[in-house]
Amino acid sequence: DIVMTQSPDSLAVSLGERATINCKSSQSVLNSSNKKNYLTWYQQKPGQPPKLLIYWASTRDSGVPDRFSGSGSATDFTLTITNLQAEDVAVYYCQQDYSIPRTFGQGTRLEIK
Amino acid sequence: EVSLVESGGDLAQPTGSLRLSCAASGFTFGNYAMSWVRQAPGKGLEWVSGISASGRTTYYADSVKGRFTISRDNPRNTLYLQMNSLRVEDTAIYFCAKSVRGGDYDAFDMWGQGTMVTVSP
Image: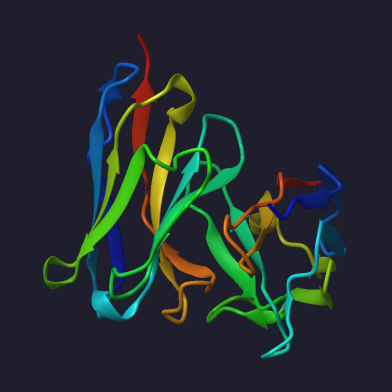
């Protein structure tokens, strides 16, 4: 199984500042045939189901603000949130969609400083 | 409007069975792979099982393989998860989720609100 490790486990950022969350996979999730990284980012607020933010490592889902961006390739990925807003308080998960089982990171809790 | 509504969660005893359902609406259900993802109380997300758009291909996490069966009824726009030989560690909220582009390995762009399964003696 591919192990997904996020860092940090939690972070506190001031409103208007930048938040950076990292995700490392135990093996590459880059599909050599289509050159896409099968890495997804979700946001989950308390009492709600997860919400898709970014797939293929850097493709924002429809309606997701451009404050959210994803980068990285192969085994190392980053979710960046610029101009942090109060509504961004949530737990963020990465997931690999490259192989079965489709594993998630442990989650990163984002709070306002 | 795209909607997924899970049902069937309940209190069950260890070794018991439950059948979860997920009613889909607002999209062409038969064109999209679907999955079940669970979340134990206060814990992270765990992918449980997936099924192709046609229903011909199924996938399972090792933790449920041989005990859970995923299926779908495309004309009825419904996804199922038959859960047998339940264990205490199966206690979780179970979400159904839709693939963003239809493929078996796509991200999930739509999630239901979840149904709670509690396994306790």
